[in-house]
Length: 396
Image (cartoon, rainbow, N blue to C red):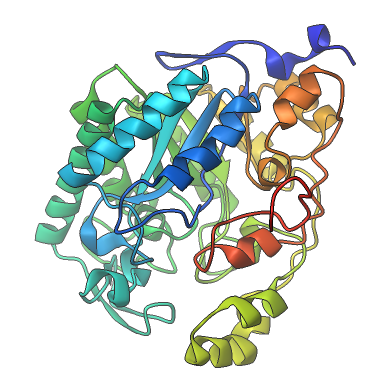
């Protein structure tokens, strides 16, 4: 297949942003920050993807609030972070790529070891990750976090980012409000789907108002949580319709799974339990993982493009541009997805395995990423710099 026939290599637009092709490096935790700030190593890692041909790369897991972090070194958005964020954007732009930032908040599973405070979420709920009982957010909390998201967006624009991804998936705070498992409120922020969607919609409006039309904004949106008491697909489709009606986002990145309930649902493939045992420095966490790991990290067999069937339901319901992700490895699958109406393809592990995959496609040197879905890269996240142990061109 010659590059002249590849739809994924065609230039496209995401809101006001022109992209050189349709491939986006999605947000995957890098474990390359220090003191909540950008490092040279973080920039160099993302430049592997931009130099390898992606249209846009996404800086992952930047917390809108100091109390929304899950790792002590995780970037959180404040004035001190802007110089490093600006260096990040300048480096990606120098490679001809757009720069995106993922802004989120961990909610009820924010780690007190990172934040120094008790976590809070939609409802009072025990958090195994935080090892404490999270409190229910008050109206004052919701006002503050809404403004934190807006301020984070302002800082991102000041730093030069082209795109802002608001994390409404994977059981993070905005996803928690959408999920009936987390959101048991009886006030206007809970109850039926419209109530549960109220706070995420409010945040997206605040982000848009803070940035105007100068940058692309999209929601990383759960289509379903992957377990019976969580968000079901039909509600995920309905939320997509609501976000389209609101007119605050330029696209949706479609995903699924819940970090604290079904973490492997959003990754699929081999469970990296053995690797987690050896990498985690905490004896207590290793013991807990050995006892509870088989329950928490339930296996979900890998199937390429495992979110595609669910995403087709959203594609049939909305006219917004959609980003497909979830185990998309083969060139043939990417081409078929574009032909079906998915405007962008978001890749994570495929690019961690082969950072120059887009260039290889263009030059006819590859038809798939070579990722084996072993998830050993996932086991390294949070403990050491995220990397693929199968790569032979760099030290593991």
